[in-house]
Amino acid sequence: MNPIKIGVFGAGRGADLAGNFQRLGCEITAICDFHEERLNNAANRIGGSATLYRNFDEFIEHDMDAVILANYFHEHAPYAIRCMEKGIHVFSECISNGTMAEGVELIRASEKYPDVVYFLAENYPQMIFNREMQRIAKTGTLGKIIYAEGEYNHPGDPMDIGFKRTYNYFTKHWRNFSARTYYITHSLGPVMRATGATPKTVTAFAAFAPVEGNVPNACFDGDRAAIITTQNDDGSIFRITGCAGFGAHHNAYRICGTEGQIENLRGMGAKIMLRYNGWTKPEGMEEVNCYDPGWNDPDEDKILASGHGGSDYITARMFLDCIREGKQPEHPFHVHSAVAMSSTAILAHRSMLEGGKPYEIPDFHTEEARKQYENDRHTIFYGTDGSEPDLPCCSHPDYRPTDEQMQRYLELFGR
Image (tube, rainbow, N blue to C red):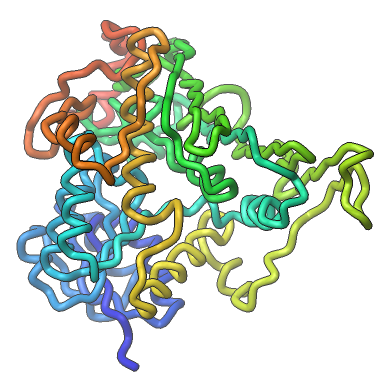
């Protein structure tokens, strides 16, 4: 069998992901990025004889079976659609669509090209503790799942110049305008995967605490967290954070049913706490079970060599299985789940701007919902095409970095 040929669009994160596809026997045949240094670094990391492109229009004409979309966070949908039109399978990082209208367009394209696999490359459900929570939830011993929490908490050192140089190196970079609800898939994806539920209504509130002091800063979002609550299609409730920046770094998840609950313990690595009541504990179990889960996977060596705690490798493997088996991925990686997650992110931000007003998450299976949002292009981001945002990214719409903070940032990056 000939190796699957993979193209990489976005050579930063894309180079990380490409290594897992190489471990899985794929050929990285083309790499595209407008940033020449990043493009060359990716070529050196990946090795082989991949053709390098600075222009997507040329890149998309290259002979390849699938594309890793690792370009800017909010700009995946138009490129995913271009790939679908060419019959190229799509492995799309993070949110699927930056606007509601793009979500409609992506759904319509997926229906027009049903043989093209669209896979949301959300990796956190594949982390070892989240896999264990999924496994236990499926046993039914927790009873009916009625509540779940997902916290992706990623505070940053405001003096970490290396991070800024790599990840938000000019004033209009998307990270400088990303509202706290938007980077949602790392918190929402794992609980959707474990429970099978999809958000139907969302509300959100912000915790405003801007960076202080004379530090290099061009971020126009002074919020540290958005606390998001969803009511789901099965009646359950989620409490999630998007990307938060409070306290100490952690990825924390909790699944609660009528008969028991399971969570990973903050600051304790992959350790799991599985608890029941005395009258609900299954035979052979204790009321309190604290343990380190195992992978129980034949590819464990390759998993451990992968990024993000092994989850990057498993996510790539799942995508390739879909291609080889000619099927679309399961919930929450298929296109409707991806757009539901992105819609939750977008509408949670609008809720936050309106003091917690509830928003209904549209079901884009229906043409009625598509018509409602097909022209909704409101955005908090600058586009690489020069387009400007028309919504504030912060709960305090007039917030901006201090003149001193911006000056220090410009001294470092010049733009």
